[in-house]
Structure formats: structure tokens, C-alpha cells
Image 1 (cartoon, helix red, strand yellow):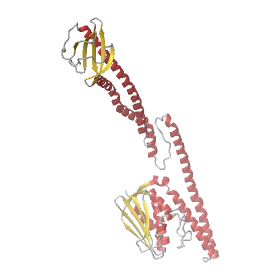
Image 2: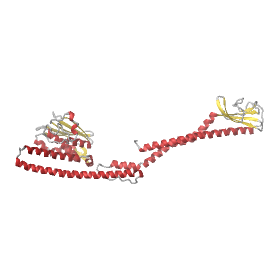
Image 3: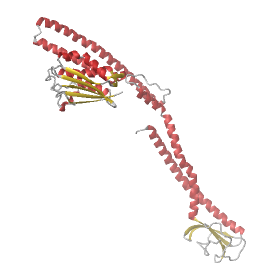
Image 4: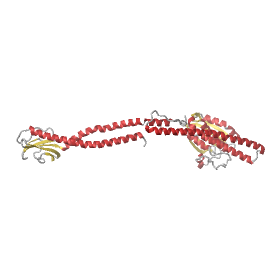
Length: 439
């Protein structure tokens, strides 16, 4: 059912049409019977009028011109042997039988209904006849003209029903508009001026659901905030103790190196999980603003430049200013993850190229590196959470948790963009191409 309004309109019209059809059918039959009764009464009255208006006459071949060819009359003697007079279109013989009452006879290729009247005063028979097909035609015209207004009223009723149903569904449209117009971070109750009885349960249950969701989001925010503090602090303490331990045992201790790698991995995992939370649609879409993606890339590269310099990697930024509507933190996180991956998996002395180019309706961001790349059959799998090519023990020996490209894909989806992987134009490595709608 696509539309309640259309469903109600069609249902009511079908009901009205069916009821009217049954009523019209019954009315048609009743009206036809009444019309035939009236025609019979007219025939009988005509016969009595002829009987009272004509005195005894001799045989004539005809009288004054008949007003209509659809009726005729005859006057016979008492024995029915001699035709005393008749209308011009009447036959010269007895049609049917001379017995009082109504009869149906055939004459001149038509069916006729006649009325035979016995004139007791002049001792003669009066026969008056009328074509049955003409009677039915006249009766149907009268009946159909009376039914025509009912048929015309159906479209008028449809218009009235359409308007009435629309007015009745107005509170439902207001409810839908309020729900549709809510921002991602707006979980306030829905208020309607006058809530119909049928919508009371829907509105109250929806508001109760919004209240529970609001409480849940606030609990989640508090948990994330507490988790960020509670998880980062122990890791910082571990790093301090690790530093002190290194001073006592020396830099070359293998256990110290493994412990350091584990702590770094744990810290990286916590930061990525918190970043994944902060880029959720409910959190990020509410803070969209107009941003220059080219300048944003400049800032991120400048902030992480020390990492590229440490590995003596050549990093370049190409393109021009390009405006997008997006969440600043989310897009910064996207760039940081892409550049972090490129930095980690590109060998020392390698090359990284970043380009930002505006198109007609979108902005293209491309990050290429000269690292080992990703096999083509793994392009889709690397977007899965916690998935790493070759598992945890990556060939590069770099720490990772398998959330980087998952977060990137999540942010691209949040900005209604597209992401695709492919071979780099730097001879080898990976090229990540992202298209985001432009401003």
C-alpha cells in the first residue's frame, strides 16, 4: 500500500459505486415497471376517450391524419366482423383477439401492445395499440435522465473524499514532517497541536523511544569520554615505566622491545576505536561545515611531516582549492589514516603523492604511494574491521589493527562519497581514490 489517502479514496469510491449500482439497478427496474404502467394507463384512457368522442359511424377507409406513426386505433362492430373506422396506419384486420384487456401482437414487423375496450353503450369494440419498442425507448430515456445526476455525482464525491481524507491525514503528515526534519543529534520529543485519538499511541511511543535513544546516546558519549581518559592514562603510565625499565636494562633488551611494540599497538587500537566512534553518523553529520579539502590536506601533511622526514620519504601535494560540505574532524581523520598507511608501508626513500582536484559535481582526493600495494583480490576485504593483509604479522613489520581503511570507508559513506582502490602510478604501490560531492 503506497498511499493511505489513495487507498481510502479507492475503497470509499468502490463502496459508493457498488451501493449506487445496486440502487440504480433496483431503481431502473422499478422505474421501468412504473413507466409501463403509465403507458398502459394512457392506452386505456385513449380507448375510453375514443369511445366517448365518436358516435356511431359507417365504414370509412380512414379518418384525420394520425399524429404519430407509433400508435393506431380500430373500431369494430359487436361481432368483430366489420371495421367501422380506423387510423390511417392501422391494419384492416383484427390484430390479436377481441377480448377486453391488454394484449401483445405482431404487425408491420413490430411488436405492439394493444388495449381492447368493449363500448357497451354503442355495442362495439375499441382497439388502441402502441409500439412496444418505442414505449421502452421513451421509458429508458426518462429513467436514464433521472440516473445521470447520480453518475455525475461520483467524480464530485471523489473530489470531496480526496479533500476530506487529506484534511483527516493532516496530523499524520505533520508527524512525518517533524520526524523527517529532525537532525541526527535532535532527539527531542515530537509535539503536535492537536493529536487525534488514533495517533496518541504512535506519538507517545515515538517520544518514549526518542527519550530512550537520547539517554543511550548520552551514556555512550559519557562512556567514550571516560574510556578515552581511563584507557589513555594507564598506557601513558606504562610508557613511563617502560622508559624507566629501559634505563635500567638497556636499549638492546629484546623483551623491552616486544613490550614497547605491544604498548604502541594497544595505544593505536584505542585511538582508532575512539576515532571510529567519533565519526559515527549521529556524531559527525550534525557538525558539517564548508571546508577546503586542499587546505585541509596541507595542514594534515604539515602536522605529520616529521614522520615522512624520519623515513626520508618524498611527499607532494597537487591540485587546487576544492570546497566540500563535511565534518572537519572526520575528514582530518580520513587524511591522517590514509597518510599514516602510506607512511608506514612505503619504504625509506619512497614517494607519496596526494592530489585534490575539483570536478563538475564532486571533489577527487587521491593518495598514492610506492609501497608494496595490495593484491587486487583483497581490495574489498581490507575495508572489513580488523582485517589486515597477511594477518597481524604483516610483511612490513609495521604495527596496525586493521581499522584504518574501515574508518576511511565509514567517513566516505558519511559524506555520501565513493572510494576505490587501484594500482599506484608511481610504478608500484597503492592508489586510494575518493570522490566527495562538492559545494
